[in-house]
Image (cartoon, rainbow, N blue to C red; front, side, top):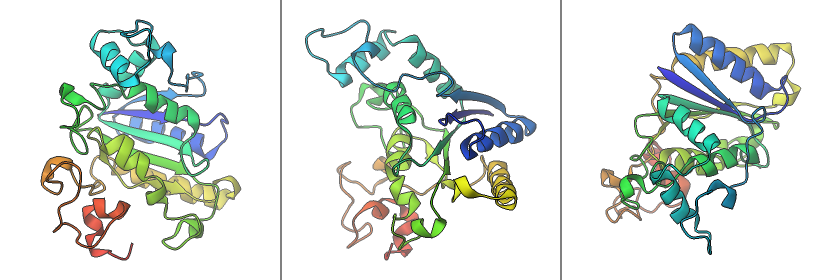
Length: 262
C-alpha cells in the first residue's frame, strides 16, 4: 500500500515530528511505500489567492470555484499543487500529523487543503455539483487518520471537559475536509500534554502510536452517515426517523445513536 504523511511542525524535536518518524519506520517495515509532505520544510504557500490561477478564466473577478474548476480541468494549476495532488491520488491512506493550535490545525496545513482540494477532485466531483459528497467523490477508497499533538491534559477534552471533546473540535476536518470528498476516516490518535511528557510518557505515546499504525488498514472508520445512503432523502437534512429528536454534530455519526447524551 502507499501511505502519504502530511505534517506541519517547524521543530524537529517536537512530538509531531516524533510521530512522523515512527510512522515512517513502522509503515516502511510493514512493506508500505511511504511518501511525505513536510509543509514547513517545503515552505508551502498557505494562502489561497489569485496567484493559484496563472491563467485566469475571468481576469476581472476572482471566483475560487470557477477558477479552480477551470484550472483543474485544463492543466492550469500551479506546479506545487499538481505535485501534491499526484502524491495524494497515489496514496491508499493519508495521515495528517499536526499540533492542535487554537483548536484546529496550523494555518500552513489548512492552506495545503485549501489549495490542493480542487474543484473536480475534492468537490464538484464528476462536474456534478454536490451529487457525490460525504462518502463519495474523488478520494473514495482512501483512508485518512489524524495524529494530533495536544498541549493540554486529556481531562480538558473529556465529554464534559472545558475545551470540549476532541473529536467534536476536529469534526470540520474529519467529517468536512476528509469524509466530504469520500475518505474513510479513522478515529483520531491524540497525544495529550505533549510538550511536558517525561521519558516514560514519551515511550508510552510512541508504543500507542505503533499499535495504531499496525491496524491502519484494518481498523473500522468513524461511522459518518453517507449523503447517498438513505439518511438524507433530499441530500441536505437527516430524515425524521434518523436519530429522532437529536441534532448537532453527533447526529451525523451512526455509532452515536446509542449515545444520545453525547
